[in-house]
Amino acid sequence: MIQRFCTSLLASALGTAAVAQAPAPAAGAADSPAATASVDRARAAAGSEWGEAVEFFCGDSGRANRADDPEIRPTRVFDNLYALGRTSTVVWALTTPNGILLIDAGYPDQLETVLLPQMRAAGLSPDDVRYVLVGHGHADHFGGASYFQQRGARVALSAADWDLVENLGPPPAGAPAAQPVAGLPPPRRDVVVTEGEPISFGGVEITPVPIPGHTPGSLGFVFRVADGDRSHTAALFGGSILLVNRIPTEGLRQYVQSLERFGAVTRRLGVDVEIQNHPLYDGFATKLERLAARRPGDAHPFVVGTDAYQRFLTVMSECTNAQLARR
Image 1 (cartoon, helix red, strand yellow):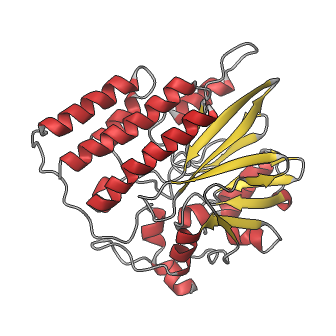
Image 2: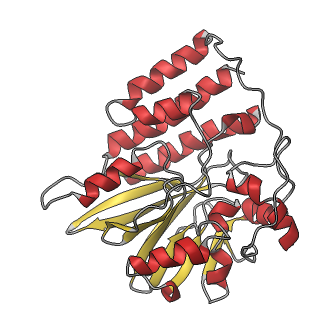
């Protein structure tokens, strides 16, 4: 099992499923009317907030997260929510009276070098981790989960992606063979996340939303965060497709449906905070800078508002439609 895990690490760390690559559009090729219309709708939805997302998802500037991307400074983003990890792969720590709930657990070979030191630097004890929610079944998300599981923490993932974790396949076609990697084995099957069943822990209720497309069992999460005497609703879309040419057409169509589903749930729950586990396209670094310089009375940079959050999902959806139209 460990050997199959190591062989598959490259594919997992890239955030890609083991599928044949779809052909990329020819360089310099003109967009079809359908693709152009989708890009125009994405730009209209972007407003002043999401131009970076348009360029990332609608253009050809998208890239996968990398295991050597710069580390971020461990940051208390809300009173009960911390950001840890790297600029392209973030672990979120939600603090509760009953202990810490992690959303994702980083790379399997970076537990001792990145995640645990950053937790301690933020004043969080790794011994207090009681729950790990995993956005989807790739190694850069579940990597450190078994460490906490061995110490009594529960680990939660969708049934489809528990299957993925337990049946790791070879790298995608054309990818180089993975080198042996020192790291943790995958977690053992534990909590199975089910649609319509909230996850309650330490007085916090997290609404899981199935968002298949990137993987069969990708999940989004919606939960409350605190900023002084104010409360907000945050959403993390845990299955963003970073490299569309690695996803088959049917997967992209399913992904558009997942974005529509997530939009409906987040609209109903009044989501006004946007966070990601791969924040390569949402101004994450700038928001961290603004947060560090924030003074009493200043707006919180991660609170984007309900309208802007829905427009963010529209950008992702319309850009995916544009990529489909280019095939």
